[in-house]
Image (cartoon, rainbow, N blue to C red; front, side, top):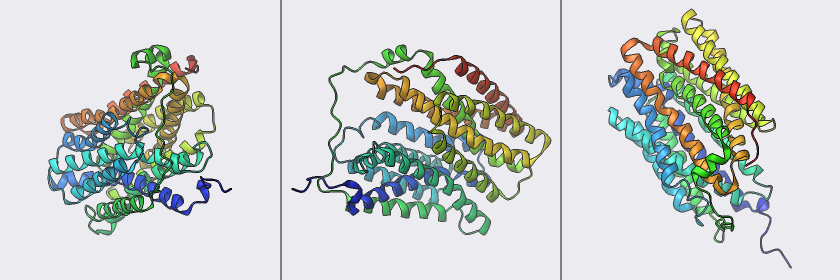
Length: 405
């Protein structure tokens, strides 16, 4: 008698569905990174202050946080995940359309918030769907697909914008029209290829009583906050460099072609993604420690590059920053999964990412410093403060044991 559940790997409909799920993630992450090289253009044409620019950048993180807090815990409980994936893709497409038509601070801010809401909701739902409809390999293929989709989406976004800037082909319109097309294509594909009788069983809860967040934090001690603090510091550096980096490159390093900055951001994001794949094989504590040390190094390199006006030093610093971001993300996330008690695991992981996404609002402070004291002082504050924080975290991580929860 044939098996009632044929091998999922051999099912062409499921393979097509996984492809469209990956396309959905790529479109969402493209929408995240594509605006980066365009910020100076918007600042000049719309007469925006640096604070306004960093608020627009932070709007994306605000949207992601709204999704994480609002629907982030539903993905594992919903049977038909299309009810989350399709609206999330609509938010991604709507954010891209609004960004393409934006002509004011508020339209840009709302576009970024919509993009963040779509990405936050889609990330959880698409990852769960990849796991449900992937091969029976313990989730390895699903994790690989998600990581590659994130890396590809983040890296290609600045490339699309940089090419449009350099060629002068509607740089504020064309990249976002492409993102809209990809999101709509993913929406149609997910709807058409969704199995009639999917292996939907939403996870059943075990008989183990759930612990409160306070009990989970008490069980992990300071180890949880070291991991969250490391990722927060890394994302502060990343968000700040992406938000004020184009102005730093133009005013302090003499980079007149900001299309080149887009390629540099793409290289940085590509290195970060590849490091995430490589670091999964290494010891998590050593990975996190090396990431913190690399983050301190890259910030000091940026500081020297700005004061000595050495563009090559800044380029090297970006590559080191890519390793630092990848290593800190993998190391901290792995350690949180290891130390979190099973009964409070979901709550601790949610708090971990909420803390990390709050880092995207720190550039607003740097924007204020830029408006009042200059972009050079903002870079001094970022590099010195971030380097000292990274070195302190590395010292504490070296002395801390991370036991299983």
